[in-house]
Length: 271
DNA sequence: ACCCAGGAGACTG
DNA sequence: CAGTCTCATGGG
Image (cartoon, rainbow, N blue to C red):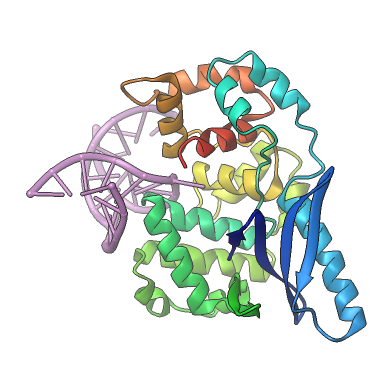
C-alpha cells in the first residue's frame, strides 16, 4: 500500500472510479505532492487532486500544532530522547475507518511481521491494484466486497476464524451505516466513541483506542494495553521487565491530552 | 522446542 | 467486576 524511495512516499488514491498515485516528499515549509497516472478527463484530475490534498493533510496530521506536546515531553524522562530523536514526526493517520478497524483487528495478538503478511494477503486478494511507473500499488478493499464474503473465502489468508468473522462484521457495520467516522465524531468524546466501537464484535479497548488514534485522531486516545508500548517503555527506561498497568497509568498522568502522540513516538523507538 | 505477539470474547466465581 | 481459558498462526 506504500512505497518509500529516496525520501518520497508513494500511495494510490481513489475518488469514485478515478485513481492515481500520490508522490509525497519534503518541501520548504511543508510537503510536495505530485499525482502520477492521472486520468485524461480534466474534471476527474481536479477532483483527484482535491481529494489527494485533503488526504495528505489528514494523513500527516498537518493541522496539528505539536508545540504543547514538545513542551510536556521536555520535562519527561521517558520522552526526552524519543522527542529529540524524532523531532518533527507526526502521527501518521489512517483516514479510512474501515481500513483502521481492519488493521486493528488483524494486528491483535500476533507479531507485527505476521500482521503485515496477513494485511498484504487481504489487500492483494480483495483490494484494487493501481499501476504507476511499472510499480503496482493497492487500494484497500472496499467494505462492500468484504461484507459479501463468507469466512471460508478468507480461510486461505490463514488468520483465525474469529478474525475473519470480525472483519466481515466490521465491513457489514460500515456498509449498513451502523458504524461510520461521522457517527464516531458525533459521539462527542473519547469515552463515547470508545463505547460505540467496543460494542462491535472483535473490537476491544485496544482496537477502539487504536482506531480513534489513527482515524479520528483524538490526541488523548491511548491504547494502554499495547505490547509495543510496553516494550518501548521497558527499552527506553532500561527496565528488566515490562511496566505494569498501574505504572503506565502513573506515567501517563503527565501526558494528559497527548497520549496518542506519546504512544506513536514510543512505537518509533522499536523500528 | 519454546515463548510470545501492536487482544478479545466466553466463561467462571 | 476481576481472573482464567481459548483462539490459532508464525516469527525469533
